[in-house]
Image 1 (tube, rainbow, N blue to C red):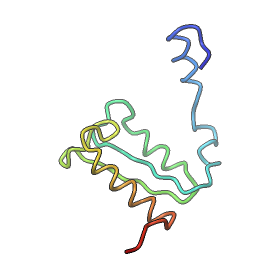
Image 2 (image 1 turned 60 degrees about the vertical axis):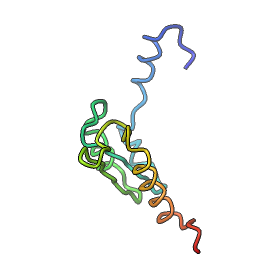
Image 3 (image 1 turned 135 degrees about the horizontal axis):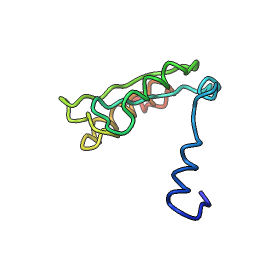
Image 4 (image 1 turned 120 degrees about the vertical axis):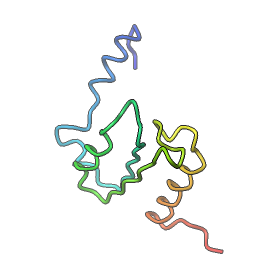
Length: 97
């Protein structure tokens, strides 16, 4: 980030946003993930999803399936399976037997 201190780096990161019409400019198919008990970004996936005007999909992960933490921590196999399924469905790259 080119900033001299960790504080300055975090301050610079806070300038990045998808508000003010930026999210609406995204045109490619977009996958938004939401973890039920995300302690860092609670509610943000819904806000982003509402602003997207492109083809969009929301995948929600729950605590009951072991994927309720931020970034589905502890449930990588489940998260990867759903993400790769979305990629296959969206971009048609699945290898057919």
